[in-house]
Image 1 (cartoon, rainbow, N blue to C red):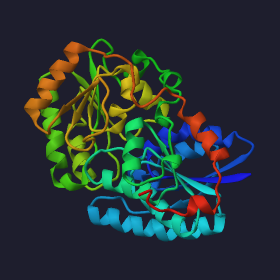
Image 2 (image 1 turned 90 degrees about the horizontal axis):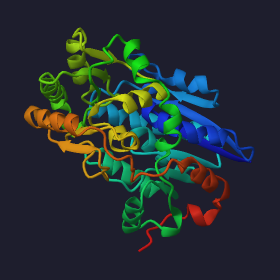
Image 3 (image 1 turned 90 degrees about the vertical axis):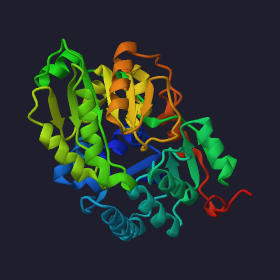
Image 4 (image 1 turned 60 degrees about the vertical axis):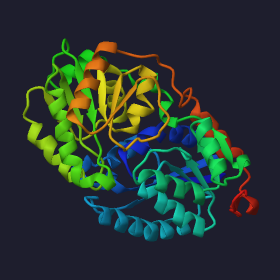
Length: 375
């Protein structure tokens, strides 16, 4: 039986992986454990560890860190997690670890695992996204042994980075698995549940801070609210991730929380979030969910600023700078054009099955652990 450990630090990565993690847990030849850290354990971010506990999946350990209000806190947290993860993984002795994306929690896991000779399977490598996320993602890729990428373009990029073509597999984005089933709550039910008018359009706002632009995070969100004010939009606003600049965003959200057309939400469980995204007239902000998942519903997305810079796009995305006038123009265009085609470059919703096969069948011997550039 192969022992697999998944490290999770945010509501986002766990939501994207939940379907795949359930598949792993249901497979007799595999034994899953989860290490929980990051914003999952912070009350001000919704204490989302409870979402993990509610699934019944086995939690191996919990690592508490500080709320990441600055770049220095983010850096210190990575150090704390490397130390803790090294001890936990050395004791648990998993056959491999599974990581997703570009967060500091995943980088800490990769650093610990490679020094313990534990094979690393990395999901969503090879993508571009600007800001600190891109170099962190590529650093994780260079530490990883098997790459489960979302697109052919991502695979080609990893090959150019020197990764072995034999170890790179196009599986699609796991966040697309089961989306139709997840979007099960009707628009009427959603809007009634928070006291909004089902006859009026609404926007789903998800805006996260960017490390290099942390000082401007609050100002940018104010520009977004200013642009939306000229449209007859109701707004459902999710609070941001725990990153440098998040305090400024939370302060601006608090200033608008009493507006009768705005609802500020700390956290939606995955099923609710997907249902809101499917029902929204537009999605606005800089979340990867707008770039990847929203396309499967044809939901128009206004992507603001540099956080998702250079990611592969679907037809539903309008890119704009952090400027109120540009955002206003984009809102008008998105509301006028309405929903787009549901074609999605990030996959067909069968990612989990492909990842499961790789986890079961990939040889984990010394040859795999011998990392070197292919050129």
